Length: 223
Length: 248
Image (tube, rainbow over all chains, first blue to last red; front, side, top):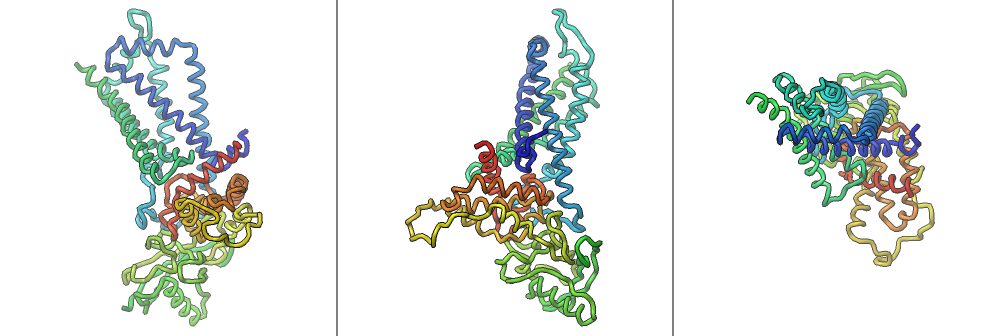
């Protein structure tokens, strides 16, 4: 049971923002590690071996799953409560953005639950493909994830699927990063425009980085 | 210039009863009439025909009291920036146009009749902590209580909130965060209200949640419809104050 404070509207959003921040930091480290693929099989396989052979990985994975589930659980609870806060819908509804550009509403902010759900489904297939996917071994006797990644992304359909999923994650972050800052209470006339700008920049960098990998693997695999 | 507009107005006999949009034609409308005056004219013709006039709230009709509040074509307080419903004029519409008029919709704002909603949930949020409980005396002499200009500006900007409820009406979650945070900022930034800042935010947020308002998705639709253009920076301050208050 969450204590009352964390089930308040502000406490819930704080938890969503905090877990979201951790998940974002995970994405950064995941991307940094994956970019080693570009350096070739040795660098990538040694990195991934060091990662998966470390006993602490179980703790990290468990923590990550817990954070992910908390993010999902709090979000679903809050979405249900929010739907209940307006039982009868408007017959005509227009974004107030048309009246005053102070609104920050975007397609991204209105589809958070959808992009979040797609991301959740993606994570499941992603783990099935890689973590629990075929086990190849290198001559040194460590897991050959380089070969697995090359095999997976030799299929252009799979590359396209990944690109779509990365776009969805990017869509989620577009609103998510700056929204988390607001939920933490970070705001000032001077810093807010910068926070919004940095949120979008980080989203672009992360999304582009993750989109680059399937394309690179596909192209490198053909040569 | 005379104009004719077609209206689709939400009619509901009483609380909890089913309602529906009913079509009306407002003719002999002058472009310089306010939106509420146009409704007055429609009501006069309804009364003449022996029908029940459309119920809607209004008081000062000067944009300062916060009692009027309609959702006009899907936007609380209609199309004009920084204005209440009573400040919207018929020149904003084209002759022959169809205008949909609905009440503010939220579980915490039950419909009393037609376009009139019960906004006393806001009063209960104020009663939970939106006050200064010690006697701070009369107005202090100028400069006897120094307050930095930017702080005074923020407090006064928030004090402009008239509690109309448009923020709730515009929010996809029917959240009352903009209203509550405006009151928290207005009282908490000034020395007379600072002492109770922690206690106030916890009590007001508890009451707000208990009334059945939703939570904040940080979209800022509230700020966009606010007739006083209260900033969502206040919501960030409320988040900050609440988190600080519960750990201290």
